[in-house]
Length: 220
Ligand code: C5P
Image 1 (cartoon, rainbow, N blue to C red):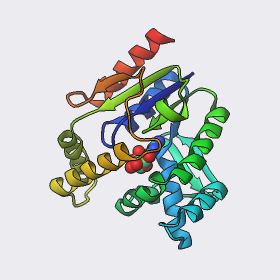
Image 2 (cartoon, rainbow, N blue to C red):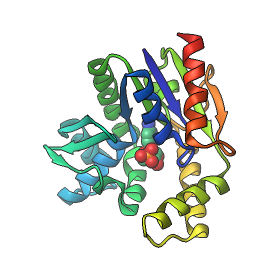
Image 3 (cartoon, rainbow, N blue to C red):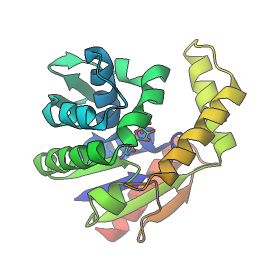
Image 4 (cartoon, rainbow, N blue to C red):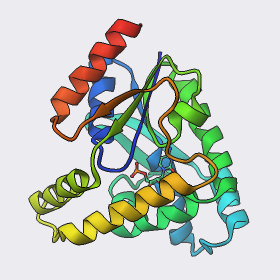
């Protein structure tokens, strides 16, 4: 069983995907971690992030593993746990080089398919999963919410974690990231044709997960 979940940052995708995978007893594939992982690795190695060929070569050779864990997935690069290090604001911003490169995307799409083959049954989350990476998926979802709601959620999350967070700045970075994700020629953020669209603006995570589980139950 292959279930794809696409949508913009802050739509509730990550938490809902993880919860859905647990409730179905299948694996969870976080494809954003592959774009983040390559950006992180490039920074560590001092690679030129604007050199697409160099980034693609790095992506071809990266030893990146996604290891299932209680709280979702651990991300390992050459055996080192980088799960937290790839989620800083700096790396989030640098993913524009990896996600924006057609060359890097073609390498990472193959890596995601390979991980998928190894997992067998899984819930996968990203921007292009139902459209490009797993077009034959059994069930496809597209989660959405307004930029303002997504910015509010992210601000609350950061403040709850004791981090300084400015709502206006976060809203602007969400709008910028959406624009880049939608505008790129290869693997843009789109609603796949057969996707079930869920607007999560007025829903909590449990409601989102339950709604998806109901659809999966009806379709499989
Ligand atoms: O989902 P997450 O925020 O971890 O994704 C990090 C970045 O990677 C996103 O900004 C997006 O541009 C990119 N991405 C992508 N395609 C995917 C998953 C993530 O372009 N399938």
